[in-house]
Image (cartoon, rainbow, N blue to C red; front, side, top):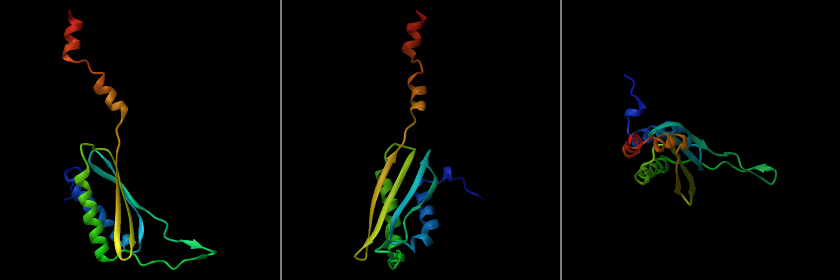
Length: 136
């Protein structure tokens, strides 16, 4: 039986994202993992990275990717980030990661998105007081 993503908690959805990206993260030592959220459901997600770095006319040796321990720590930190998400339901979370001196460093950016058209509908609805004043 297929589960509806809307029925899964955001934390569970993010856990699924990291399981899906695990193989790709194993080949990277830095980049940005992003998740786009709409109505508390993760839609688009992925990794932004430039895996080939050139300098002086040659390409540098590619560094080893994230170890199993790095990936576990990264996933744990990403899940902890959700504790800082407040009332917004639409937006993006970007996890900028890099391995430095054998330790994974993660900076998270939480971006909330709002739609003015939706707010205008809410704010343009007449209140009970407005309706009472117009009926007099």
